[in-house]
Length: 169
Length: 300
Image (cartoon, rainbow over all chains, first blue to last red; front, top):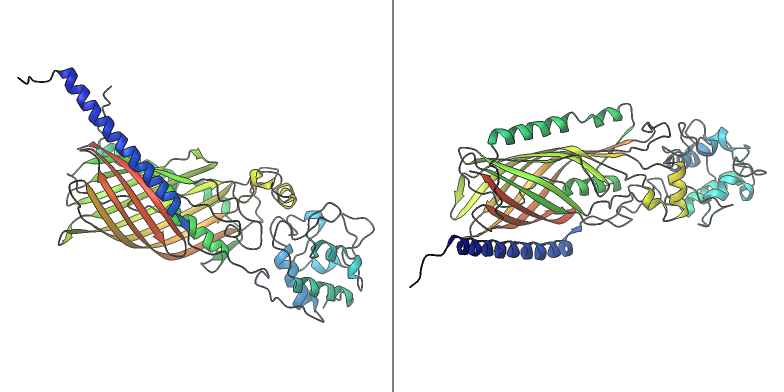
């Protein structure tokens, strides 16, 4: 004869069912989580524009206003760097200040050098700091700091401008 | 041991949602952005794509089949959304260094549903401002769905949702990532003043979608949806100066866009009160991710 289950037996059976249900939920969640990690991904490509929206050409006879200043403003005068507010190394390269701040001005971080020495790109601190070599200069990292370096064409434009006298126009 | 759930009154739920709405709306983050330069971006720029990706990552999607309830039924649960890691190139928002956006691998979110008469349901979610994975979110999501249309054996559920709030974290300046190269270390010391930044990512979403759902057996409810989202996303670069003030030289980035997305998933009615769901969320050109959710009926 099958009698009616006692309350204790009934509770034990119910607890078992709940435990099995929870186990199934956890297994399903685990499988779903693994599938999630495997399936999820980004669906966009990085933007590759090392010239930063500027023309990437080596200008043979550059003009400061047309060819050089846009590079300095776009790549150097950004917030936290050589902007009017931050003035890292005491250098401001905004549109109005860049020329005066560079040409024939002593380099703050390297005594004996000037920032831009007309006709002498090889002894101008600006050219030294933005050059293609990624190694530190006197223990200081290449500029622009922690950023995509200037392109070879942009560096050539700066070098040509300095070697042709670093004229203001 | 028997666990008893204390029934939540609908009025209590509404009060919680109203408080959350007030907290998110009164969030004074926008005050810091006064008189700051603003940069507008779209999907053609690296910053626009990056902001769109994280906007999708926090989107308030159904995360489960819209279900039928008796009016004034309350269901409460939690959702976890996987946030895929991005490469250094994807995290480079322009020509600058990669941003430290790989902070939280999972975005957790509590959710609640209140059933109304006329087959309407209101869903709510508030992510309270608790610091998790170095990130503090304060996001509110609200949705209204109507399960009143039926085509054959399929219910067609229109759903309107909105999301607002912000996520704070050290994304621009992060000491943990600064030690990886001399460049980043110098950047952290000079540009970041040797402090972690307090960046604000603020999404505003208004979304319309249609979800089709049916029944497979007694316990499985598959669903699929398509939607459009109008969004305005701001990223307030929060470099902190030594005097504790946000550096006003850094811009606020803004994107305004309309984005399409697809959802698909399966809900399992695990018991008379419990449900679990898995959802695949796909936003073309942005993100594929999976959301898991579990909920319990706490009042009927």
